[in-house]
Length: 460
Ligand code: ASP
Image (cartoon, rainbow, N blue to C red):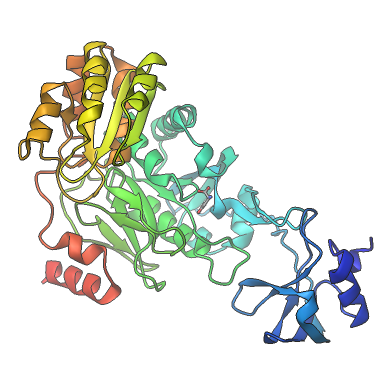
């Protein structure tokens, strides 16, 4: 089939031919559903033959059923080239040196018209070609460690990343950026917060919710914010740098142990939970919101503990969960389980015997809360007291995913369950805090005006 109608077949191909329209035509389509204007996109190999796909000016793609189309007119032709030109990143001696490790995710993606899917495609030159402003902020060197969507990140990748970051710090880098898929960025941020301690420089995870071929993409802005943070900020912590409010006014810097992806599609998806973000960042400045963070240092001392026990599981409790869920983990040799319990940290009574058996057999079981905000309180109801008597250990206000990576990290270092307990309950980088900020829950889950007002109140 000719490239003029790339991917189209059957009824959809006939319709295009009938109205003399080709792929990449800008067209007006009249259908019984209304009038649409946009660019005719190629179709993917496995797509159906009943729809014509149009990219609207908003960047969204829609499919129009061919039977509903009564007229199509070509008003222009706009062939898209998704290959970003590669250019060598310039070197400016006065600027800080920043290293970007690529792991994949949408931030490193563009649309692949063979399959119609977003595919990871990252190269250093492409990055500069796409966001030349980065060269005003820092001297950037890049290294692609992985090219995966973030559901494929895991202990092996955390360890590789931690070691690579450690080496860069020892060599004298001024800041680190990690390009990462957003879906599990908070797991990786948690794991790195434990594996890399006492860093003298900022370590900034960044991603994007929308790929760079969409006009509403957050990729470039998030990258510029991350570069500014890595190059200039004095916050020497593992951070997540992503959209703050729903507009593109500023980004927020979240501490790696207190951050979570909270929305499947909003660009402002990351929220600090149980605390407030560390700082705001825009293209001009970095404005701290808190001041109890670790400061940038000149020395090169960093503690890398790249361990992880893979036989650790997280169980999200649901009413009527059966004990065999826990039993099967024990039977399969799991060494640790983090439970996300209801309310203050509960699970149902029929599971108790399985918990008792698991802890007797030396499985470390820790309780977190599904509510995300708030502390585990196991003294309030008899359920909680019973569970503690059976060996479950509450983890204060540690987020479930953070407790999961911390338990993997702790069991990766030792089998001694007293030592594991000590590691788990010793706060590291605010994974456990003394209290939640007053009103933080209400404000940071909410809208833009309240958030701005809240931050203004802190600066007053
Ligand atoms: N599925 C992607 C990922 O997490 C989503 C993203 O990057 O935003 O890798």
